[in-house]
Length: 160
Image (cartoon, rainbow, N blue to C red; front, side, top):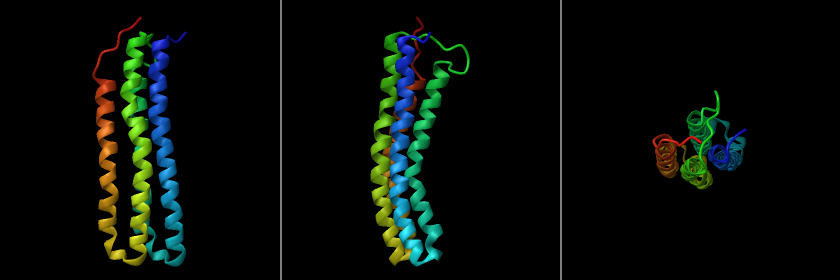
């Protein structure tokens, strides 16, 4: 039987992977629509646009990484640890920066990517600038990844 603390920890993992993944799915979908429009007019611009479409997908990868760290922390692949409620809540709280920032930053990164894709449509030589602008939003997802990593991985858990 899984303890309530372990349940909270696994809920945190699910939130990190699920919300960041949802943000990435939305973001990649929004950018993909823009890429489809540009490449329908000029297929030669596909590769420059594809990079911009892929960037909002990284938040989902970061959320998945945090979820795996939680799985390791609770020994999900062995005899699962029975955590105290406090330990489980601490782990869940540690997952929230990645969950929330992953969801929001992926969507906003997609909006910047869509603008960058429009730039590439008119001036393909400016694709580097469009990528830089899109990557700037990524900074906040990386900061959330760092905070969640430290909050989940470093503190010791208390077993029941």
